[in-house]
Length: 373
Ligand code: KG4
Ligand code: ZN
Image 1 (tube, protein in one colour):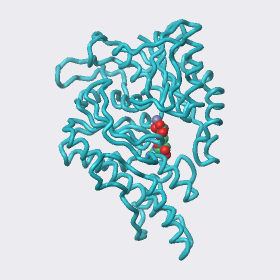
Image 2 (cartoon, protein in one colour):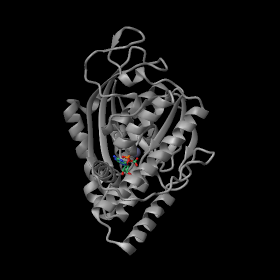
Image 3 (spheres, rainbow, N blue to C red):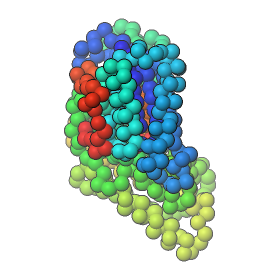
Image 4 (spheres, protein in one colour):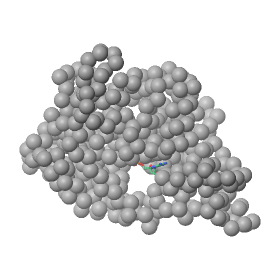
């Protein structure tokens, strides 16, 4: 079957087309053979950069302009016509309402004119599903368990339920216990800012640009490589709280006060910004890892999976892998280019929803900016 996926929940206009072949399509945990025919993203960073964050109305205008173009390019790359598409997987929420609505309108039009079923997808589930796919290079992969050769996503060999999922992005910082496909239990969430949002705001305060995550990560890396040492500490919010909730707005405020305190004594040089970036990033990493490992232990999960834009952070990936290993828990993460928003993760989530029978039509779908998992 051919799945077309549309993702416009924030500031990336993404369209993916996948071909799924599965002999056991009805089976619950069928290992699908997934071939990516197209996975295109039109980023709006250039538009939102000067505002230091995503401006919803500008985002929706850009989606409206770019979505038909990205869609056309994806079909061309996949060498397909609209009639070849079997179903449309569509992000309906959570996200920015003006952005989501562009995707919804577009899918409605396609569904109505070409009589295509629509699979509504939760964006957060999309991030989770980025771990159920590893870049598939068309070569045969040997399944160590069954000793048969099959073309299946190799991450499936390592992922065992139950999974403790940390979704960490610009809009979300949540822990979901996942007992199987489509079975989620929220065990912790941020009480204020998402971790990615804190990265973006801290970067803005230091005049570093947008999005803040990759910029802070690069500065922190440079700090590690230099001989400079600037003594400063930032808090690790809620690291010792008994629950699995997060809070990052206090950390952002701590950066603000630290910058003010230093600027009263000396000029804020690039070296000082590097030291702040390093300490800020380590604070976020410490909290995310500590809470996730505790949650995984409490719920006795076999796997920890991270996803969302912040999961592209190299230091977080490295330290998580190490800590999970020390605790004897299998750790998985998506390829870096699937951490941030993309259509491919929506296509994969769409496939699992299709297996579960969550299929709708153009006249029944709508955007839900606060959609819960
Ligand atoms: O998943 P995503 O593309 O969009 C949302 O669903 O929010 O995540 C975007 C967020 C931004 O806040 C960005 O600063 C952050 O992910 N991000 C990173 C890195 N790359 C992107 N944060 C830390 N380190 C990175 N390397
Ligand atoms: Zn996202």
